[in-house]
Image (cartoon, rainbow, N blue to C red):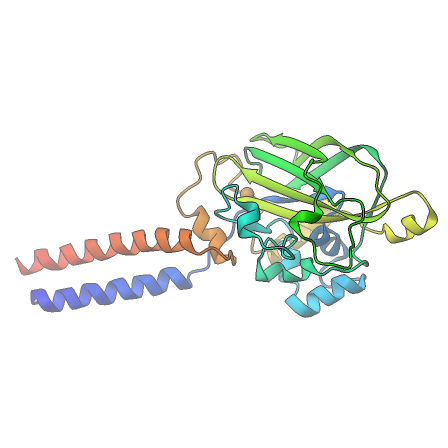
Length: 293
Ligand SMILES: [Cu+2]
């Protein structure tokens, strides 16, 4: 084989390797979702993706399919790196600006909600993988209009809870206490969970209704998924439910895995995939050269 021909062969191999890398699905990493108060995606998943009851959950599935519900423990941005307000525009907070989860941004007042009162509140986050990091829970200001898309400026700057997430969970849960301020009516609790062992962050909206009256109770229909439901639906998930817990040094392709699940920020995949293609191409090219020597 001539040097020129072997170069052409190497180039073709690189091209097919690039195609292979871009077409090969890889499971996204597992994370979690807020079960207390129940997040939007968890509340719909709990109804059963194939047996949805709430109109808003049915509309979500009609718009986006059921995969966002089976992937209830995702809603991540792989390379957020603390830049939450820069990379998530107003109106896209609940989806983390992910097209896959766009329905979660709908400003509707019929999302399944959790009844709450001012004062101490026990938060419960179901995590399918624990990560060292910081979890911050915000709540909307008094006067928030739930018929308008959620904006960063709607959130009270003072968190209602902050929690340093340890590398081991309490049997699949992070439990911590916060303090809810006085509010009336429907509000949103917004979770920001920034990993410290990687730039990845997770987001979520939980609908709450303040008050103890019958009207509040009637609106507060959210239920968290049962463990049986989580187990039964795991095979439909594109998000790993196990396997990378406690990964203090995430492998290089973790970012790429999250990217393949639809992150709007493509840098990580390009970098990781490009490095792999380059390495493979260099190897093939050198083999070709050796043959011609
Ligand atoms: Cu994770």
